[in-house]
Length: 71
Image (cartoon, rainbow, N blue to C red):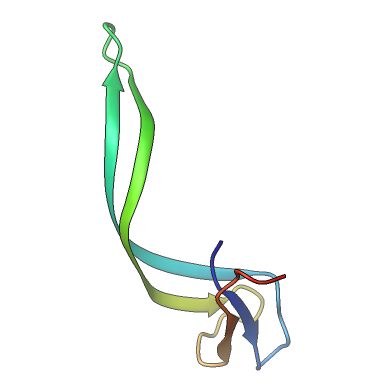
């Protein structure tokens, strides 16, 4: 579960565009016909690059509320 955000410019708590950089390890399973199915994927590292409010379009007023683990 990711972090929660709040836009101090417009009060939005629910809609954000989040740009992430991820490093993953995945098990790729190709069928005999050449179709790919990713059966398992581990996220090795993840970094949030940018967060912008979907309602007002700004990232300047976006604040992180928590890590998303409590509730």
